[in-house]
Image 1 (cartoon, rainbow, N blue to C red):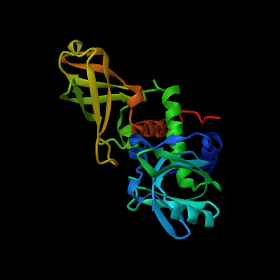
Image 2 (tube, one colour; image 1 turned 180 degrees about the horizontal axis):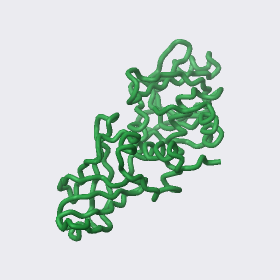
Image 3 (cartoon, rainbow, N blue to C red; image 1 turned 45 degrees about the vertical axis):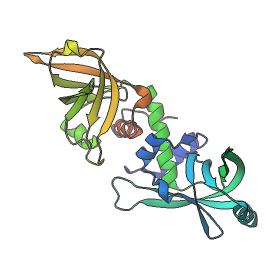
Amino acid sequence: MSIITSQEIIRYYEQYKDIEVTFNKHVIQATGLLTKQVFLKCLGQQWPCIIYSSSMLSAKVIASLKSIHFETLKKAHNLVNLRLSFKISDKADPISFFVSTKTAGFNKYNKKNPDIYFITLNFTQRPPDDLIEMLGKLLEANINAKKRKDKRILITPESIRKLSLKGKEAFIYVESIPRKCIIRDLSFSGAKVLLFGIAKFLINKKAVLRIAFEDIKQPVEIAGEIIRFEPVEGRKDIAAVAIHFNEDKVPMEYKIRINDYLKHTRDIPQIS
């Protein structure tokens, strides 16, 4: 995680506390959620669960509950702690914490599994700052990905360092065929790259840009389409092509990275 101030934590909480984030595979990957280390704790007992969604005020989890569990909840006056754990790329050890909650509702998951429930948990106090930061960054990045989608980041030695890129070199898969390329600029909604070949034959082709970052083990892949090209003066064998990303499928970790860069270079104003 990048360094964040207490003022930013307060702002995230005030602006986004009611907004629910669904923990799909992209959010799990972006946050580093350790799914096997999530559980409910009640009167010393630990019950495995799956976190389905969370805001800064409540969460929904899926868990197997039998009559003995409901008896325990009754004894605890429906108070239960939600334990979450996340693997952060720049930290050696996972971040783990408990959120104090009270059960607010139970719904059957499906008829085939009568003991599986959707459980609504209302937080009994403000959650730990780590959760506020994670959810706040996700929500802010999604908002700015729409408001500032065309704001371009020119790839320079300084921006490479701040974005933690391994370099300006990347791969672009055009109709599944890999090609080496050089990244010229990046934005929430697209990229411009240099590559060898006759660019006019690449227009309107599906493409996947594969970008390597220093702090992520696996390269980030972003699907899109090549929408235009520009000739490179003096080089008929090289062209600059513009890729428009499929905005519904841009990985969350990419959005967060672009948002953090623009925010810390003062290109994105604080939302008020």
